[in-house]
Length: 287
Image (cartoon, rainbow, N blue to C red; front, side, top):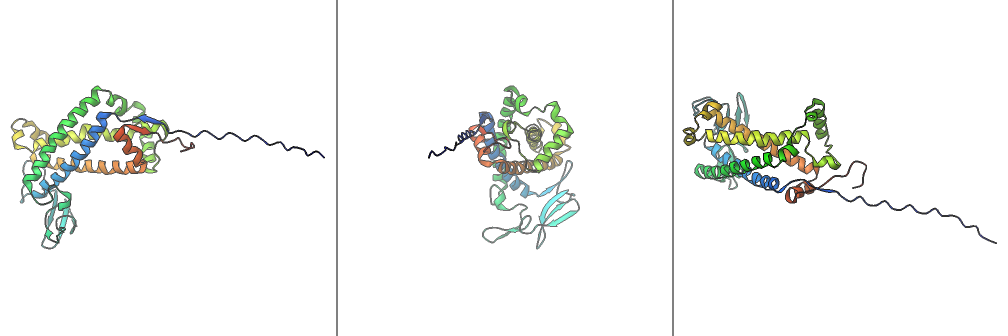
């Protein structure tokens, strides 16, 4: 008796794996300046905190000394450390103003030794570190700004287009960041509006402001450009602005690191080392 053959449907061919797409995202000058700038700003921050320890009070105007009213102060009493901003005073014992070093010795500097260069109190060495790397910052920033302007980086990557100025577009980007919804596909290779505004603010506002206020605090440079004192309202005002701008850069750095960690640190760091960035697949595509 013949046995009927049961037709077998041909198996569907397996879908071809989606290969990762790589794009050349960061050119060599950007990568070099990024890492030089990271090291430079870290050393300048730590040496700047040592300089601040010499007189941990900030003023507005031309003059400032212990008898004058400071708008910000980090200090200590007989038993505690404190941070004062205007009329707000917070105890900071163990962190700022009064703390204990690794050998168990109690210190009364504003910032602890682990946060300063050098780690032991030395105003002269702090100034040497700070002023040397100030030259590194000024020269590298000037070269990078020229390259950005004349080699197309500003127009291609940082230029804010008319549609991006829309309040709806900006608010949409803010909501996406708050929900940790990062761009996928080709959009991930482009700077979004928040990145453009923050990078422009750092490169063309905060860093030049740091350099200009730093020069204003130099008595020797005041003879060359006395108009800087008028521009910033005096040496003490320049010192205050310098301090505020420094912590604005710290805030930018912390947010930048957080975004790198959330977006995928391996891909982000690799792109800043080699220039090549792997595009995250579009939603619904395979990894």
